[in-house]
Length: 166
Image (cartoon, rainbow, N blue to C red; front, side, top):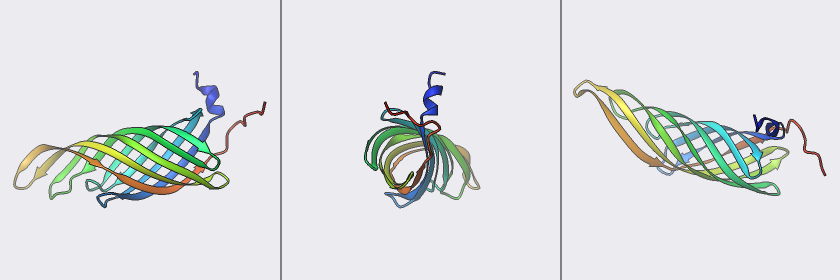
């Protein structure tokens, strides 16, 4: 309840980014964030990538940011859950977790419309339950790092209540 009045003055932002991982796989992210404390924003997002043959990752994130004119630079942490399918000839699906760090910048090109660039370092740990026609059934655990580089468009929604000048 303590944050509810702050949310009335909060700056909400939605974004869509796309890019590639350093290893060549594609990645797409959509986010919704809110700035409600000075230099702090938090939010939720959804990532689709083909790092391990297609995964769906809802995630939460928190960033520390600094603004100067039309530019905002930020760094933060993120974490989420993974739902994936294996890259081999088995009928398998997996689940697990992912967490990481991000560094990015946003530049306002026109009234509340921004260009965003972000680089992430992420660690994923996924357990696959598989069925193979020769090997039978089992569980395989896969852990790995991946490094998405994305660019995109973000939109800052108008504040619900404007701050009064003192």
